[in-house]
Image (spheres, rainbow over the protein chains, first blue to last red):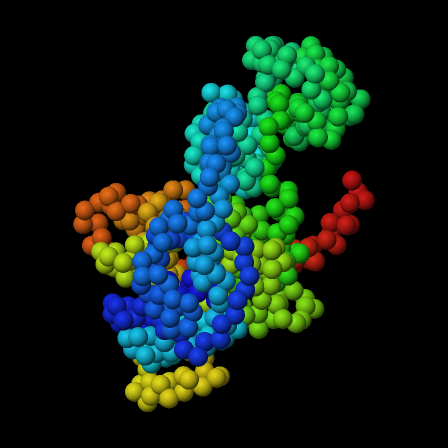
Length: 153
Length: 476
């Protein structure tokens, strides 16, 4: 599972949901793997405002990954500043003229780093632990198991 | 606004307008239907421009192509007149272009020689360029609509080709027969892609399927550019330890393998094993500041309780203290399987809606499939929620039952009526057996029984009386 999913996951136990300590889940004994993926700038831009940044920093430091900046990057930081934006944007008024020519954007180093952490770093084996109740969810072959045992439903 | 002719495939009729409207909304162009009939593959629409038309149709699954309408009529004479009226000003533009000119019949057709005569009758358009069948500069097509088993067409259209849809290619690529890993209830590729279109899947969006199985819906969403993840209560289907539904297939088959087959791994976040009624995803109450929605869409085909059991975590009976203790003692052991109990289908549908409200962004979409028996006279119950607006209902009919694709839009906070969130507590069917909990399942199996007895009766009729009949035949 890619690290981005941890940004959406809490403890499955209903009584934990209301306790802020249940988010994020804390990785323990995690085996990480880097799986190369194509950088998706549109997606990064879309997901950036929805990220729980503070929690992402916590997970990242618990996994021993390079420290993330204290504040989340701004959407503009994801794109390499372009020197000649108007050259490519010279829109030929095609039929209808409504065609807004897509300017080819280059992802910045910030975008690449974010992509590396969120979409290329995967937890293959290990546990995810709830900070509220301490319940451990096992991750096997990259698939976490959130089924609750009989006494906890 | 220019008028266009959309050539539709004559399948899944109730989905066609819905799909086109969804694609137009997604492309941000205005689409007006001028002429549409469920029994006709030709649909006339208004669209702002050729490029808008191209945008809408290239992603369509139920359209085959789109043409600029140059004329129509119920005879060739009226067709030619209409072409003179509507498009004479456009002829000169294509005078020197290389071109292709074809005739297409629906429910009928003409011989090659007749087609040639028809094509020659359009000589007044004065195309002087080279005819070229492959990659011409411009392509024209005459459409002949026939009634079934009638030799002469009843209506004609003539159009300039604008764009082809991805229908044929996508259907071929995602064909279940060629998919690495499927299960017994994998949905047909055409319908999954169609669902993705209706759910407004688009590049850069995040989609989730809570009943993913072997990943049919996430794959379709990833095809249209979304980043996807999913979950299932059965971990074996995700990891691929349950074996393949395909006869004779052995070895490691898993969902990741499917994404690899289509080179979509980059768009796959992964999946986890979970139960929707005890979901690990963030679903805190909406007023809590940090739980604004984070999913752009949810697509799913929930288990109906017939071929796939409808079960959630829990025990049929209240656990005794000793049983509780034994679960607690043993749940860490490797072979431990959490207990599951059958669940009410209507309750599950409401749970899905509540989950969607808690996780979707404003204007995010939920598209889910739901079965119903066809014989019900009562108004079909469509689950609803004050924070969701029903966008469309599409029906795929089978013999005795049908399934419907329900699509909802998550309202923006400002659109939700005051006090609407005072949740209406509903009473669900009580019971511990699957059939007590699932009205549809009960009907399905009763219907099945009826059908069986009908079949037996039929066989008996065939086997019984034929002797007498045979004896009578020679007399006639």
